[in-house]
Length: 118
Image (cartoon, rainbow, N blue to C red; front, side, top):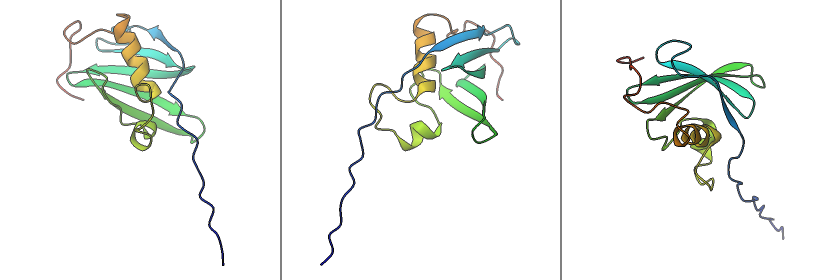
């Protein structure tokens, strides 16, 4: 008779880190800026339905692009997609942009001219 041992996953930790505005929205062009999340630079584009973060993943050697709604209630990054049960408010992108909105370092809708679409 063989016995199967069940592996128990350790609980997910809340996403943590730091966010910093490198170039405010409007300095790159009228609806874009640059932010740093946990030391990783992202080009931040603002549009009618939300925000888009463009970055580069050196581990995978590929560009990344993540979309977040205006209220920062979600993100389409792999962490948000595959670890939706993460406690404390979701992925680092969502928490970072929410922190910038809360501290008035990221313009809210209507505070800058929005393009029609991407």
